[in-house]
Length: 347
Image 1 (spheres, rainbow, N blue to C red):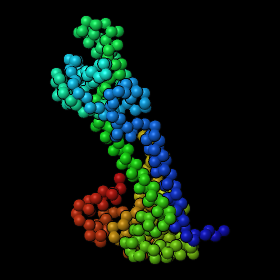
Image 2: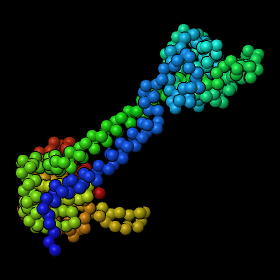
Image 3: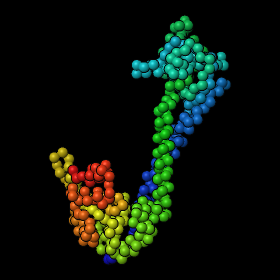
């Protein structure tokens, strides 16, 4: 049965980018879920600490991130250490007949000022931990109080500025928004390529050799009349070499191809060689370079033979002589020649 290749290029482009829609859509859904489940917005825009609102209300509201303007802070004389380094300095402030402990970063309190008139910080409201309990024990001993007595005067929750982790927060949010923006742009571009295939990169590359819409239409027409040579994902028509792989599309005028060669890769685990894969590499005018997907050796050999017969000016095979000829034809600068040699070098 004769296979119908009509509009295979445009149809394949649409199918390929429909598949590519899935990953950015899933990623954007994950980001949206994280935005709803995690207090990301509260990290950017923390709640303002209100004098009349108890501290435990902030911790139990789902987001413990706050922005606080505090006055009359007194140093307790005790510090918090983490991994052998001073992580913060404990201060206390009196609000609404209750003592609130505030852990300030060394930079904010200038490494332990005895008294701070006023300070504006971003931090978190945390329930007292082991270090906080040890602080209360020390304060009770200094004041000759009992632990129960000081617990009645000091709030069970405290404010920690180091817990805000501004640097890490900024980095994670930057990653969040940058990757989200990339996924959104990728999604929009995929939709554009589905609706208007001529805008996809593979078709835009045809602009190197003429008007993309006309060249694509000609390639579609030639492919519709059955290709002169066809493998699973590579086709040769009268004037074009076409790749329609699962994740790649390429259309190259045969007259513009200047160099083709086969690249083999030996796959092995330790000393056991279990397979050899083959890929076709094509260099065309206007600095166009294409690496075809893996194929059978016989298919690639057939493609090379047919292209060499269709265009007698094509250089066949990888060797230093052909590489130098291509560099001269493409007018590569010396540093670009080194790069081309690196990219084409067969290990």
